Each structure stands twice: as structure tokens, then as C-alpha cells.
Image 1 (cartoon, rainbow, N blue to C red):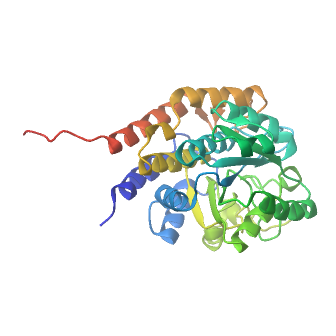
Image 2 (cartoon, rainbow, N blue to C red):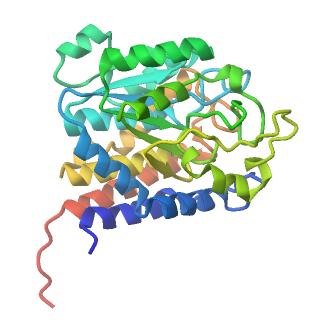
Image 3 (cartoon, one colour):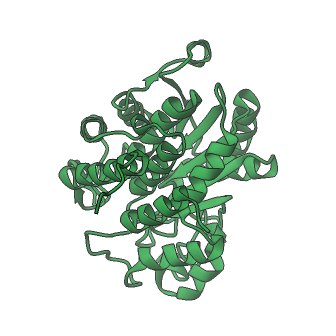
Length: 344
């Protein structure tokens, strides 16, 4: 018999995989197919699985790595709105739920917008020495290299420096079997994206919990179902006109994979499950924080996934994202509420 947290995760999975826009991918209903494949592989609600592993692993004072940074020049110079809000909301969650210390990671050019987004989520991004002295309310920023060889070295150094308990990659492009990173349209974006797969792979060899959150199959985490994606055909197996011909599906796997209609929403589902498990609604961010995060990020250059600098996440408006947060908070609130016995 499933426990109540798992049942909540079931409903959250359904909510965060509900698309309200028409995807342009060659495979119809791609995000639902991704979810079904990930669910079959893991056997339980994905938001619940991620939350359960985090609650069982993360303790007060632990460092946790939160990674994002999809995007390419010239359209998404500072990154896209999908990803940074997920990082900021989960960073806030780790602080409120565990008094853990987030380390936010992206490449140098995208860091300013990510820091602004985290500041808007009640996190003071400060130098490491001050974050180590604080009990709560702060995060560290660590830029990560675009260069492959530098990234290998940086991965080992960062793990040694912080000894993280967990790593979560959100809307973070991973390499395919040919070592190339792609947009969902098959554009080679390798030169524009931090090579954080070295960080994830190093973490897995050291037994550090890794979680991938994505919505397209090209993001870190989907390596768990690479063969299944490749078998679907379309862009997953053939990225033409990109000459690598390896498809957009990544080979970079994580311990837990959360597939969602919008990557930020997958993060919000985990946030909600953790909020319920630790029995504290304040762990889940609210509509005001959602607005503040999106406005702060866009003001610093974040763009919609469609390439315009606007208050939009993958084609969903600010109001739609606030409404989603409202519904999620209501679900958690009712999960935690002690109900009066019905008299009839």
C-alpha cells in the first residue's frame, strides 16, 4: 500500500507533466512519452522519488549543488527562464527544509542572471567563507568552465571543496553519444554550454546522489532512458543537419530522473513533495516569489525558450506559472491539514 507522500507525488507528477502549449518537436506529445519512459524505468512517481532520496540524504549544514545553464548566443546569451527559477526554488527549499547550503553552478556569462533569480527567492548569494558561517539564508555561486579539459579538473576540485550530499541538474544540456550538445531542434550548442556532465559523472562514481530534471530528452538525466529515446526516432536519433548525426538524446544519466512539461515545474513538484514530507508549507515558494524570480531573471537578461526577453517560461506566461504554484501550494496545504470528521 502506498503512503500519502507517494500519493501526493502521483498527483504532482500529473500536474507538472500537463502541457499548456503545443510542442514543436517532431515526436507528438513528446513530454508525455518522456515521462512514461522515465516512470516505467523507475517504477514510482518521479517527484516523490526525488524528494524521498533528498529527505533521506540531506542534513543540516550539508552543501548541495544546483546546476543549470541551457542557452546559446545570440538569442539566450544570459540563459533561458526555464532552469534558473528551478534552481532558485530548490535552493530556497534546501535552506528552509534542511538548513542545507546551496551551491549554484552555471557558466560565467549566465551567472549574473542566476544570482539575481536566487536573490529574489530569499537567498543571499555570498562568498563561500560567509556562507559557511551562516546558519541559513545564503548560497554560494561557482562558475563552471565551457572548456572540456578545464571542466574535468573543475569537477574534481569542486567536489573536494564542498563534499556535496546531492547534485541536481535542471534544464541542463548533456552530451549525446558523439559528445555533442544540442538544442531540441538539433542545433549544435556545445561551445555555449558548461560541461557539467563531468561534475555529474564524478559525483556518481563517488556515490553522491544525482537528480536530473528536464522536458526534452537532451538534458542531463535522460541518459537513463537514452536507448528508448533513440528508438523513438526523429530528432532523438537524427539531429540533421548537425553533422554528428547522433541525435539530441543525451547519454548523461542520473540516479533519479524527473521529466516534466517545463523543467521548472519538475523542480516545483520536488519542492512540494519535500514540503509535505517535512510538514512545513513554507518550504514551498509562493506566487509572489514566483513573480519576483521571473522578473529578476529577465531584468538580468534571461530569455524565454523561444528567444524573446519576456516574462515567459517555455511559452507559459507569468500568470500561468503563478497559477501553477497556487495549485501546488493548495495541494500541499490540504495534504498537511488535519480534517474534521464528516458528520454525514
